[in-house]
Image (tube, rainbow, N blue to C red; front, side, top):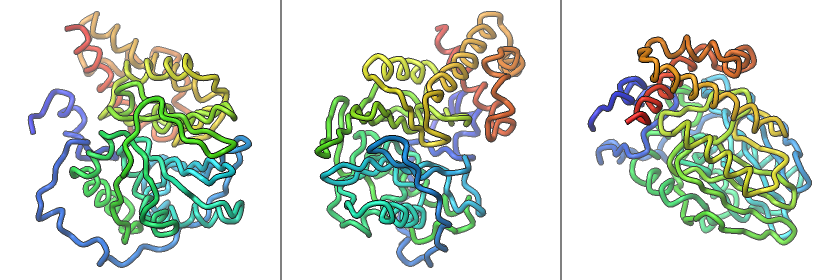
Length: 337
């Protein structure tokens, strides 16, 4: 694997919470039987919130996997219609999915009939195992074809094993269940009184992000294209692509409530995310034009109030802002050529 300048800045993308989507693991490594592992402990119940007439969400309090939170770092969203429930992002483990199912069953007896994985980062799909065990092995699991291929091609093993390491084996027993139904932009899934509409606008957080609109409720489930008071991991993505995707989502829907996979759902998520990314990327473009070196990009970005004003309220800011500004700088540098 050739190391680009971007890969060297991000530690070859093998540390932290990102696994390169095209990484393929040796067959001997992939052959470990995860069903032989002792299952990790149950996950503490997190409240099920109603964010619109048809949309419920189990919100993750943290943004990074730890032994203490057992990998509970990503929101799980349910769209509940007359004809069934669709899960949008299933969580980071069997145990997390099992907890979300307990919460859902306390609210409704309507069964889960499908799952959607918004992209290939493991906190969004490793919970497929729990839902398949609860609702049947034939349940359709929708995702972009690139997401499915990434999980099948080695990213799945990498994410499963990384989650075990980050949580001190709290996610043990989780099996890799890839998506089985490819989706394209514009696909609509009807639940009778609610519709799920797929949006895909190219590389944003990853090359294969999809967002799911529930037009009846004016809700957009955005995965990691947007976050609320979190810094999105951009090692696989594009700042320009994310900003273009945000503009497309606004243009092509009547969304009022933005439901991210990290942080609170609400009306303010859009502008929070857009202003942060505009501040970071435009500062880096300025630094490149002025021949300010990579090492000086963070200082330039922190002079922009769109960036600096978010430091105190953003989880993981000090640990991540330097790396993600560096990624933006390299993207801005590349755009000059």
